[in-house]
Length: 319
Image 1 (cartoon, rainbow, N blue to C red):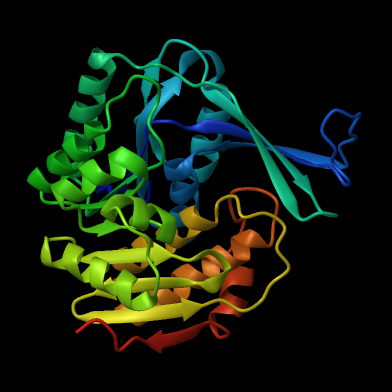
Image 2: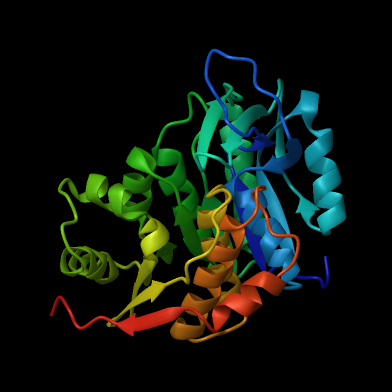
């Protein structure tokens, strides 16, 4: 930690140990040989925390962590210089195997079951988030939920954060996203499919997408960022709607790209950057992450080079 105040907190209720394997010509039902691999302590909030530290921002991390394989996370937190406030739960944090095939440019995910926190663990997490939110400017709640944790847990945490005067940022999906939106966090980042599921109809045009985002703005959500994959992302805030398009890059893996986008937006918020600069930074970081196999960037150099190549358009749609 770089000062006495925790400026940013990330919450990861369902972290994972990501084992990324590069397997040229991967084939199910056959013997496959791994060309290279790496193992990372990951999960959306963990990845975001690592990126925020690249900007020199003070960060604390919390969520649920299994006692039986916590060491890989503890080492990463120590290496990053983040405050470890995770609630320990009996058992093992889940493992996620990602098989990357450079020949077909495909990724195959094999996800193990995760932890099953009980009501007492959830209460401890809420108490931890409440305490940390009193010292924070921004609290990021990111990722899926563990087995047995109700979707309204995310909305509950958003309310805790807001009650302490911090800004809640949410990146999740499905019923958890719906509960979060009802609690009106500062920022949400669905992709276009998740937004369509949330509103119950397809997003057939950018006009549709921006109209729904503006409705969310009117309901108290200051910023809505909707990722569109390789097509870029739309950002709607304070009456403005921006479409950002990344340059074409050699894609290795999309793992962690959404986390990088959130990390860029949150870093921009913490640094007081205007919307267009936040958008440019977030899009460049996401594009840079796609260019490597792991879920996290080791430096910001590639993203800085890409920033000047991001196309940003003001969308005059909706009304």
